[in-house]
Length: 119
Image (tube, rainbow, N blue to C red):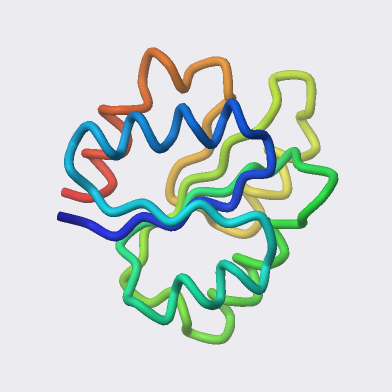
């Protein structure tokens, strides 16, 4: 069982991610702030998923700083972005997320991507 940390403000998207990861038996911590992510990562995480298009929390900058500080060593990263937000995709690419996916593809590909990232 993997430990997955999710930084997503959108309740519907968070529920979808919990359903995908929970169905596979993984432990999921849903966070709504940077501080909650830091707390959740005190227990070693295997995967960190963020919403790169969120206006409420800058998950891309958080992951960038955590990568630079070595806090995400061995942790895979997945950035989701709104289809109409190419700037969020570009920022996630610059930071170096393992996978960057439009939210619209989460239903069709989410379970396989989570499994691939945890393999």
